[in-house]
Image 1 (cartoon, helix red, strand yellow):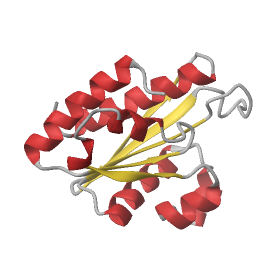
Image 2 (cartoon, rainbow, N blue to C red):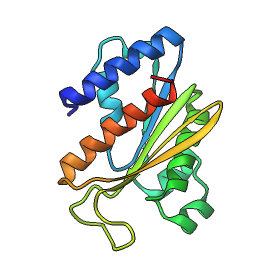
Image 3 (cartoon, one colour):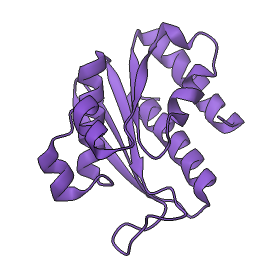
Image 4 (cartoon, one colour):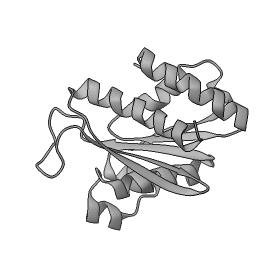
Length: 162
């Protein structure tokens, strides 16, 4: 469930996107649709939000977000390269002006020395290219997912110059 922090950022994003006529898509792994839920919690989101993909499994990242098998094998699902590929794939597949992706290890299990719990990559893609941010959250599973969702919304705002 989106918290007030997420909803506030989503409302700011909506205002900018509506003003500029931008259409947005999301592609999420560890957040499981939380970014899309925050966006759609704001009335009027259907005027700019096209939809989202929840690509928890690698096969779904490959098949729906067009992440190449080579990138998944070479870097793993939790990587900057996969986050970028997810965002670009979702933008193309859904016909959005910009798309944001989230992939990470929310916890409490699944971490490793190389990819600890809390490690999250957030990617963004638009017609000008892609960008990615690396985060290492220190909360529990719920906090890590919420922090990731807020960071994804903030990256979208940053990308549109807000």
